[in-house]
Length: 174
Image (tube, rainbow, N blue to C red; front, side, top):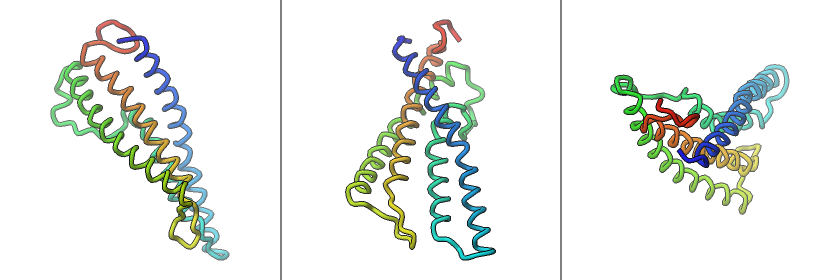
């Protein structure tokens, strides 16, 4: 594989790893918000912002962790015939799947950027009683989709190398 591809994969996976590790801890922030909400509802007056904040944190957790999940291969895989294939066959199958995912993520990113642009331009707010601005979470969603797209391209390169019987770390047959 060309050196530029190796550098691309290395840097994208480093960024995806760091963002994914950060996103992993967002679950604790969400739990803290929900615990605070329960405490306030039980002993004082309920607060308006906790449910939506917890939802936004969950969206950030999910969207920012997508590329990391893909990198760690902890996503769901339908394994009827896949496990019986050789390493090269698995690489070929995964490269087709990665290409399909890239196509899907490009369309998703287009919609996400369009929605983010709308939220920023018109100052879109949620229709709840708290009515927070929607642009921050839409920016995070677009960033997460972009990161997952970059990771999918890196995975495509890894799978393509595996289909050729190579690894990206070294130019020797796998």
